[in-house]
Image (cartoon, rainbow, N blue to C red; front, side):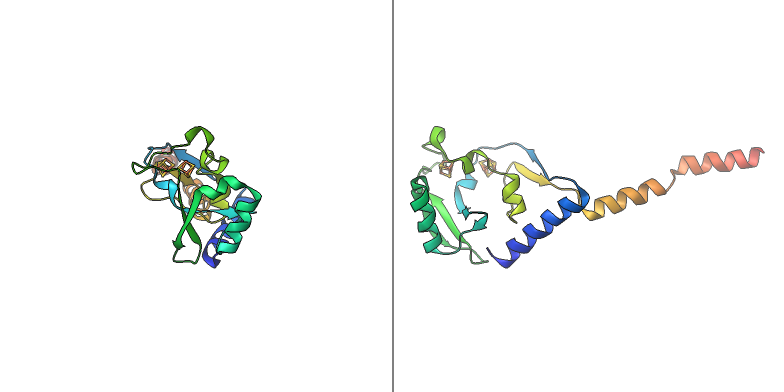
Length: 157
Ligand code: SF4
Ligand code: SF4
């Protein structure tokens, strides 16, 4: 796992633990098929970096042999294409696709530090420390109308 993904995942898990707010997955699939190439695969929660790790994954589950190594990404994680995707980005084995395909985008992927493409119809929605800070701040600041009402009451006395 790259340091970036590792620390991002760690931070996200820590924030969820502290704020007790699970990430939500919102939106819907646009059926673009873009998540079926430049795929990151993981084994036991760790993204695959080496061909040796990928071979071990395939040995444990031959269904993974459908994937082909493209190249390492900027962070040194191997990216994969899927031989079951046709030239129109359509899955030719939709009924038998892997659980990782069915569950994409999963919360597990988010908590491992993964991110979605900008063109994906889904997005992750997480409550941040800033959100909590702003909510608390807002709840302490009275509405202008409330201040006005109080001022009015004071002058009426
Ligand atoms: S099996 Fe189908 S859904 Fe899964 S990555 Fe390959 S083309 Fe995509
Ligand atoms: S990239 Fe997102 S919108 Fe496109 S097929 Fe995959 S899940 Fe659906």
